[in-house]
Image (cartoon, rainbow, N blue to C red; front, side):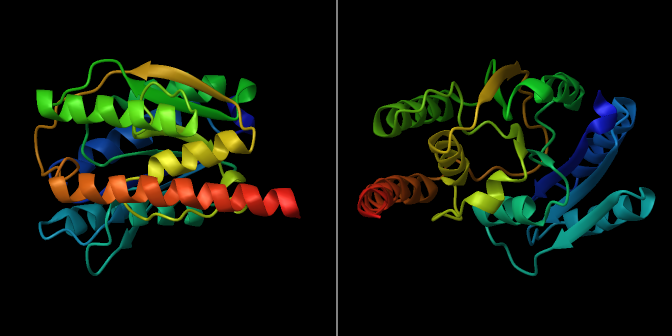
Length: 241
């Protein structure tokens, strides 16, 4: 059945010089074992000040199906994610972060579900975060549940397979941390089905995480408010057209 599937895989990478080679090596191994019709792997190196860019180029030289997109300056997680979705070539897109916090062997379970679901969405069974980060994540998912009527266990989990056609149907307002949630909300509004699968979350050993900075949290709150207004406008326009 996997012989009918073509999969685009991409990894945003920032401050990941010690992580990205582990991620890509494992990804290529797993993708070859899956016996897919075809696949591609893209590292999107987001202007890292460390040696992530050099390591990414070495991986592209090592593997025929691996390529690198470099950003001259840091564009941010959301913008990097959107670029990965838009530039993917194949019918299905898998993404996870370049920080080596997931076991890529679990991708096999996700591919197995593809014939039965439009999207396969991971959730972290046990988040390897500080108590503060766990609290902010819990509150965030709760806010989205009540604000938009979506009931994902872990909407921001960076371990998903999504259909390429979704990104031909939607545009997103945000290019920041809210992008994962906006994509999922828009997909649900279009009637896409999804299956949630629990995945093991690994502690970040190397590199730098910026996800829980107060500035990002405040920007995300602003984006939620603006997105809710945008949806009201879109719904009103749909009713009058």
